[in-house]
Length: 442
Image (cartoon, rainbow, N blue to C red; front, side, top):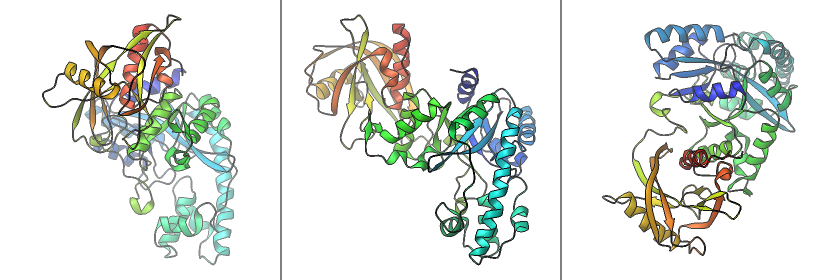
């Protein structure tokens, strides 16, 4: 992994974070300093300003963060940007993060993107005027303080009474395929990633839940095939991470994105896409510390579910260690993902008792439960799961009769991280690989 990626990975573990925020330097409602002040007020300890095609607000936001850090040690500001790229017929957005400092080297690239935006804006105003709408070039330019785009045009239409809301303006005039939409020339994903990388940054795919890839019914290892295929395509072109938790992502979508990111060796980031204009503007509220303590974030923690997990190992003929995994079936939560066999502990039940019972019920197999390997905790959207992992010897290693799973499989330890695991099981897979002295495959 590149040095910048490692630095970003370290930052992601420092506390509550929101890494997708906009200011008046592009299409946000608040000045950069106020965005920073609001982030601190929400209890965030890591935040990033990611305005479209500009770094103009970064110095102001960084100064406000530094001032806050004098009162609240540990507050960190991460310089960022957001770029639009084009792949085929689809527009994608890339977030660029610069954990080692400001992205000055990318400025010539951004200047070209702003020039293209300006040409598009001129054509967009003419298209809207052709529809009989009363807007002018001067009015659109005055609608924003920094980089101006379609969101400013939508706000202008609302302000002049020609649309009921920003969402209405997009639905009637400005969304792709609508009569007021005008496309603009965009770089492809490889060029966007290269520009961010050349400035010492990490390119991260913004809001993948909005691109429709999770809707593919075809499956690749339990994950939507389109999602795996497109992320792999982007990773080959330099992508370093995925915004797995976004303001529009919920529940199973978050878990699916997290599993896909981990499978492809991509960093998982979180960001609200805050613009300061509320739901009527079609954007999410800034994250709060109470909703951002862990990853992936979701609703505030309500319950902790204690789960016993059997770590059943065997040595294959070629000498490699492998471990037993079971695939969740049917309509169950996280169906299609793989996990270590086991299950929920009943009140008053020990881990050893729970594992012996679960293995008997799930695999129709006797088991001898050994030493504890580790205890890990993961916050899902609905609950927190505490996973109690123990070495377990099975009375047989084949011929299982499954009741709660669709498949059981012995998987080489070095291949665990490439499996579509339930998110809580990934730290255990990493630990097993370290103990076995093997290098995980991506």
